[in-house]
Every structure is written in C-alpha cells, then in structure tokens.
Length: 386
Image (cartoon, rainbow, N blue to C red; front, side, top):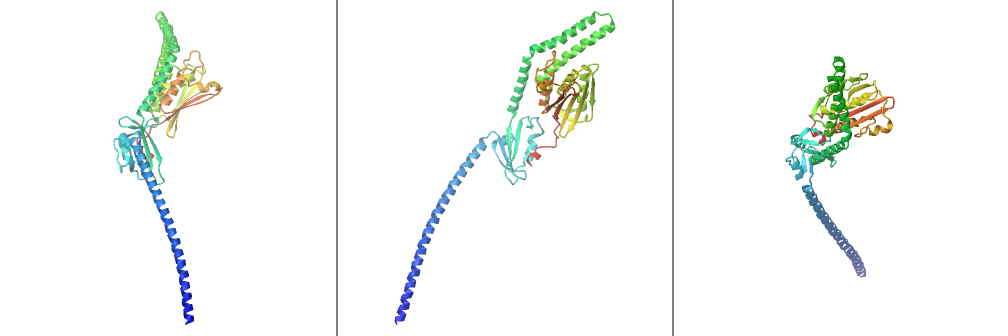
C-alpha cells in the first residue's frame, strides 16, 4: 500500500515537472511566434513601400518617355519591338510593339548615311541613331533624335564663318584680282597694236594666262564659300581627267605632272567640281615649289576609304609653319592669297574626310585627302541592331 502511494507520488511529481517544461516551451513558442509575426509584418510593410516606390519610378519613367523629344525603342534578341514612346512613333511615322525593327528601318530610311553619320528619312529629315546593349539576353535600346534643324544651323554657321573669312580678305583679294586683270588688258591691248603675228600670238598667250589665273581665283572663292560635299557618284578616272585638263593651263614649262592610275575605276560619293578644285589647288601649290618640280597624283583604296595623294619633290615645308598652311589667308608668298589650301581643307571636311600632311625639308611634300567611299545600298540598319 505504501509502495503504491510512493509510486503515485513520484508519477505525479514527474507529471508536474513535464507540465512545467511544456508550459515553458509553450511560452517560448508564443514569444517566437510573436517575434516572427512582427518580422513578417515589417517585411510586408517594407515590400509594400518598395512596391509603391517601384510604381512611382515606373510612372515617372513612363512620363519621361512620353514627354522625351527623342525616340526610344526597345528591341529584343529576335529584332522585334518590345517597347516604344510617342516620339519614336512620330519620327518613324508609326511603329507598334511586336513589329520588326529592321523592317521599319528599311521602310523609313534611305540606305546611305550622311558624312556626319546621320540616317536620312525618305522625306529628307536627318535622324541620329544610337544603339546600346540593354541586357545580357540580347535586348537593345535604340535612341533616335531628329537633328535636321541642328545640322542646318551647323551648316549655316560654317557657311557664315567662311563668308566672314572672305569678307576679311576682300581688300587683299581685290588686289589679287586686279593684278592679273590689268596684266591681261595690257597684253591684249599691245597685241592689238602689233602687226607682227608671232609677237601678237605671244602677247595673246600671256593675256590668256592672266585670265586663267583670274578664273582660278574666282573658282577658289566659290568653292570656299559653298564647301560643296557629296552629291554624286564620282569615278576616280573622271576626277583625274578633269584635274589633268585644269592643270594644263597652269603647269610651268619645266614642271611635270605624273598621274598614277592604279585605282582609277574606283568610285566615291562626292562633288566632282569641288574635288577637282581641291586637287588642282594642291598641284598648283606644288608647281610653285620650284622651277622644275615633279608632281605625282595618285589614288589608293584602303578598305572603305580612298586616299588621293599629291606628292612633289620640292624643298618641303618648314616645320614651324606646317600647322598653319591650311589656315585661310596664310601664305608665305608675297602674291599669294592663302586661300588655295583652305579650299582643300573645306572640301575634305565637307566630304567627311581628313587631310594628311607629310613634309620634310629638301625631300618634298605629300598631302593626302582621306575620303570615305560610297556606302553600299545593301546595308540598311540591320547590322546595327541585329
């Protein structure tokens, strides 16, 4: 009897102990649940704030894209438009999500770029296009900006600068024109009073030479003022033929012009009159380097560009003035106008090209016009966004 009571007391004590442990565990569990509930609520509030912030950012971005004057297009890896804004639709005369970007580009733009790298719509508007990688999955963002007015203003500023420069040299140019004109009138008037046919012929030739000089001055002024750029397909053979005909009237008797026609069948996009004036000025300058100078005219194709070089075996250009020879009105000759090489620089820039000068004293001078060739008509925007 006593043993049963002791066992019952021990069982009751064990039950109380386990009950106390369970109560403590339950209290700890309640505290943990409360803490987790607070953490969950804090996380929920944080996510809600992030969602509201993301929505505000998205709304601001959408508003920005809607009011942005530049066109924005997102193109996926398959070349399909994923997103766009109203400015892009206006620039492209309509575009929709799911359309092929390359198809729209072929419909809207001409295949050739301008010398400044702008795309040309079929109505003549100039569009600057920039393509950037957006994500690692191949998507790209295309930024389109209508730069028609900007390019027109730039051209107007450049022309005004050239006209202003011409105004600065008006007095000097008037003197330069008056000198050959007076000489021509003198020779022709003396020719009229000479019964000797041989002497009259010589005077007549001198008068014609002075008139040719006067014509070159006027042509230089016109080319410098206009700065004509690409506008037609020019074959090197035709260009060299025009230069050869122009040079015949100014070549000194003891000087020589050698034309190397290795790439004469190559064509480039340019203005034949302006390029002829530029090369003629380079050759004319080379002839003035010495009484028996040999001048070489050559064309070399280098990938997508062509270089027209004029080399002479004259005394060269002093190192201290090489950086100034293409400045308008800079000349080391008393009778020079300083306009010839400025015309060359203007023509090169108008064609999107560059000038390269290499001159060593007593070893001659080489001046090259590095010009871009005509862009193939089979190259639309596909390469830029593919």
